[in-house]
Length: 171
Ligand SMILES: [Zn+2]
Ligand SMILES: [Zn+2]
Image 1 (cartoon, rainbow, N blue to C red):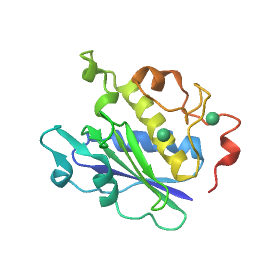
Image 2 (image 1 turned 180 degrees about the vertical axis):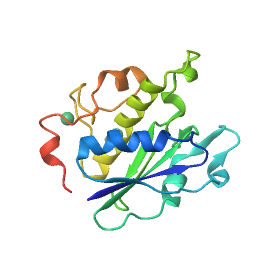
Image 3 (image 1 turned 180 degrees about the horizontal axis):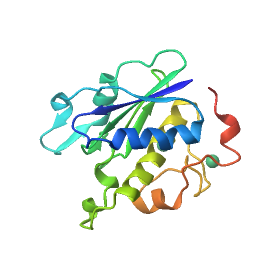
Protein backbone atom coordinates (compact mmCIF):
# COMPACT_ATOMS: atom_id res chain seq x y z
CA UNK A 1 0.00 0.00 0.00
CA UNK A 2 1.16 3.50 -0.72
CA UNK A 3 -0.42 6.90 -0.17
CA UNK A 4 0.05 9.80 -2.58
CA UNK A 5 -0.56 13.41 -1.54
CA UNK A 6 -1.19 15.96 -4.29
CA UNK A 7 -1.52 19.71 -3.93
CA UNK A 8 -4.67 21.07 -5.61
CA UNK A 9 -4.27 24.75 -6.46
CA UNK A 10 -1.78 26.89 -4.55
CA UNK A 11 -0.52 25.27 -1.36
CA UNK A 12 2.42 26.80 0.53
CA UNK A 13 5.81 25.22 -0.23
CA UNK A 14 6.74 22.42 2.13
CA UNK A 15 3.25 21.93 3.59
CA UNK A 16 2.44 18.77 1.67
CA UNK A 17 5.88 17.29 2.45
CA UNK A 18 5.46 17.95 6.17
CA UNK A 19 2.04 16.32 6.09
CA UNK A 20 3.37 13.26 4.32
CA UNK A 21 5.69 12.49 7.27
CA UNK A 22 2.80 12.66 9.73
CA UNK A 23 0.45 10.55 7.63
CA UNK A 24 3.15 7.92 7.01
CA UNK A 25 3.74 7.50 10.72
CA UNK A 26 0.07 6.62 11.23
CA UNK A 27 -0.30 4.10 8.39
CA UNK A 28 3.29 2.78 8.40
CA UNK A 29 3.42 2.84 4.63
CA UNK A 30 5.27 4.99 2.08
CA UNK A 31 3.75 8.41 1.41
CA UNK A 32 4.74 10.17 -1.81
CA UNK A 33 3.99 13.68 -2.86
CA UNK A 34 3.23 14.28 -6.51
CA UNK A 35 2.44 17.37 -8.54
CA UNK A 36 -1.29 18.00 -8.54
CA UNK A 37 -3.13 20.46 -10.72
CA UNK A 38 -3.28 24.20 -10.44
CA UNK A 39 -6.57 25.17 -12.01
CA UNK A 40 -9.63 24.71 -9.82
CA UNK A 41 -11.81 27.37 -11.51
CA UNK A 42 -14.30 24.84 -12.87
CA UNK A 43 -15.25 23.86 -9.32
CA UNK A 44 -15.74 27.46 -8.16
CA UNK A 45 -19.22 28.65 -7.22
CA UNK A 46 -19.22 32.47 -7.38
CA UNK A 47 -22.43 32.73 -5.35
CA UNK A 48 -21.09 30.69 -2.45
CA UNK A 49 -17.50 31.83 -3.00
CA UNK A 50 -16.48 28.26 -2.31
CA UNK A 51 -15.32 25.27 -4.34
CA UNK A 52 -17.39 22.19 -5.08
CA UNK A 53 -15.61 19.45 -3.15
CA UNK A 54 -16.99 16.58 -5.25
CA UNK A 55 -15.85 18.19 -8.52
CA UNK A 56 -12.30 18.61 -7.23
CA UNK A 57 -12.37 15.06 -5.92
CA UNK A 58 -13.42 13.73 -9.34
CA UNK A 59 -10.63 15.64 -11.05
CA UNK A 60 -8.09 13.72 -8.95
CA UNK A 61 -8.96 10.69 -11.10
CA UNK A 62 -8.62 7.17 -9.78
CA UNK A 63 -5.95 5.78 -7.49
CA UNK A 64 -3.90 2.83 -8.73
CA UNK A 65 -4.20 -0.60 -7.14
CA UNK A 66 -2.66 -0.60 -3.67
CA UNK A 67 -2.68 3.19 -3.69
CA UNK A 68 -4.73 5.98 -2.13
CA UNK A 69 -4.62 9.56 -3.40
CA UNK A 70 -5.38 12.61 -1.25
CA UNK A 71 -5.65 16.10 -2.74
CA UNK A 72 -4.63 18.91 -0.39
CA UNK A 73 -6.09 22.32 -1.11
CA UNK A 74 -6.19 25.72 0.51
CA UNK A 75 -9.56 26.71 -0.95
CA UNK A 76 -12.83 26.48 1.00
CA UNK A 77 -14.84 23.37 0.07
CA UNK A 78 -18.57 22.69 0.10
CA UNK A 79 -21.06 20.00 -0.78
CA UNK A 80 -24.57 21.15 -1.71
CA UNK A 81 -26.34 20.29 1.57
CA UNK A 82 -23.68 21.70 3.90
CA UNK A 83 -22.16 25.09 4.68
CA UNK A 84 -18.68 23.66 4.24
CA UNK A 85 -16.69 20.45 4.52
CA UNK A 86 -13.20 19.87 5.89
CA UNK A 87 -12.83 17.06 3.36
CA UNK A 88 -14.50 14.31 1.40
CA UNK A 89 -13.59 10.78 0.37
CA UNK A 90 -14.65 8.40 -2.40
CA UNK A 91 -14.13 4.76 -1.59
CA UNK A 92 -14.71 3.61 -5.19
CA UNK A 93 -11.83 5.60 -6.68
CA UNK A 94 -9.61 5.45 -3.59
CA UNK A 95 -9.34 9.23 -3.51
CA UNK A 96 -10.00 11.97 -1.00
CA UNK A 97 -9.63 15.72 -0.70
CA UNK A 98 -8.91 17.86 2.36
CA UNK A 99 -9.04 21.64 2.70
CA UNK A 100 -6.63 23.57 4.89
CA UNK A 101 -8.75 26.74 4.68
CA UNK A 102 -10.85 26.39 7.85
CA UNK A 103 -8.12 24.57 9.77
CA UNK A 104 -6.09 27.78 9.97
CA UNK A 105 -6.18 29.90 13.11
CA UNK A 106 -6.35 32.92 10.74
CA UNK A 107 -9.76 31.74 9.56
CA UNK A 108 -11.06 32.53 13.06
CA UNK A 109 -9.16 35.83 13.22
CA UNK A 110 -6.34 34.42 15.36
CA UNK A 111 -2.56 34.46 14.87
CA UNK A 112 -1.18 31.83 12.49
CA UNK A 113 0.05 28.62 14.13
CA UNK A 114 1.73 26.31 11.62
CA UNK A 115 2.21 23.41 14.04
CA UNK A 116 -1.48 23.43 14.94
CA UNK A 117 -2.47 23.69 11.26
CA UNK A 118 -0.34 20.64 10.39
CA UNK A 119 -1.74 18.68 13.32
CA UNK A 120 -5.32 19.43 12.30
CA UNK A 121 -4.63 18.73 8.64
CA UNK A 122 -2.98 15.39 9.46
CA UNK A 123 -6.09 14.38 11.44
CA UNK A 124 -8.44 15.30 8.61
CA UNK A 125 -6.26 13.52 6.02
CA UNK A 126 -6.09 10.36 8.16
CA UNK A 127 -9.86 10.61 8.68
CA UNK A 128 -10.61 10.78 4.95
CA UNK A 129 -8.12 7.99 4.25
CA UNK A 130 -9.97 5.95 6.89
CA UNK A 131 -13.12 6.31 4.76
CA UNK A 132 -11.25 5.11 1.66
CA UNK A 133 -10.23 2.04 3.72
CA UNK A 134 -13.90 1.32 4.45
CA UNK A 135 -14.29 2.91 7.89
CA UNK A 136 -17.37 4.84 8.96
CA UNK A 137 -17.71 7.52 11.62
CA UNK A 138 -16.85 6.48 15.17
CA UNK A 139 -18.72 7.59 18.31
CA UNK A 140 -15.42 7.81 20.26
CA UNK A 141 -14.56 11.53 20.44
CA UNK A 142 -10.83 10.77 20.65
CA UNK A 143 -10.78 8.56 17.56
CA UNK A 144 -9.63 10.06 14.27
CA UNK A 145 -12.81 8.65 12.65
CA UNK A 146 -15.02 10.82 14.86
CA UNK A 147 -16.95 13.29 12.68
CA UNK A 148 -15.69 16.87 13.01
CA UNK A 149 -18.49 19.38 12.96
CA UNK A 150 -16.16 22.09 14.14
CA UNK A 151 -12.49 22.74 14.86
CA UNK A 152 -13.14 21.94 18.52
CA UNK A 153 -14.01 18.37 17.47
CA UNK A 154 -10.86 18.18 15.37
CA UNK A 155 -8.72 19.42 18.26
CA UNK A 156 -10.18 16.87 20.69
CA UNK A 157 -9.64 13.86 18.49
CA UNK A 158 -6.26 12.22 18.05
CA UNK A 159 -4.48 11.49 14.78
CA UNK A 160 -4.84 7.75 15.48
CA UNK A 161 -7.58 5.14 15.08
CA UNK A 162 -9.19 3.78 18.25
CA UNK A 163 -8.93 0.09 19.16
CA UNK A 164 -12.31 -0.62 17.56
CA UNK A 165 -11.53 1.14 14.25
CA UNK A 166 -7.92 0.11 13.62
CA UNK A 167 -8.65 -3.62 13.05
CA UNK A 168 -11.35 -2.68 10.52
CA UNK A 169 -8.88 -1.02 8.14
CA UNK A 170 -8.76 -3.14 5.00
CA UNK A 171 -5.61 -2.41 2.99
ZN1 LIG B 1 -15.95 11.49 7.78
ZN1 LIG C 1 -12.86 4.69 16.33
